[in-house]
Image 1 (cartoon, rainbow, N blue to C red):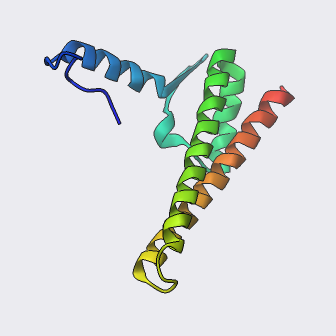
Image 2 (image 1 turned 90 degrees about the vertical axis):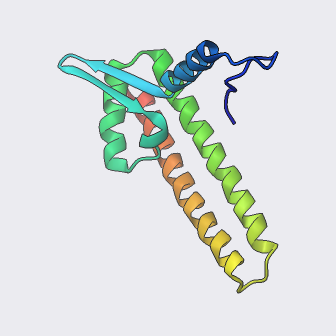
Length: 136
């Protein structure tokens, strides 16, 4: 799912394509500027993260980021949790549609467990983020 390089009339339109692609890429980044420098997080690759990393990054976000950036971070984490939940449901349905000991069932069960682990990690990231937000 992405943007087409062609406009509605079917003509090649690289300017609009690049503009929207760059805007979408910058929307997926969070820049934290603090007194000694800055940090730019690529949200898609950084989250869900371990609790140690989350504590460090969330303390910087709460201390130096604007309210709008905090809201954007929380919305991103909730969206990520919903995405993993949808994957869990999809893999569970596919696993149950195959015989119990088949290779396909084992594959989808493994994918289900991975999606569940990532969803749980994302939920812990959300809890930690909201606790720090409310506490400070």
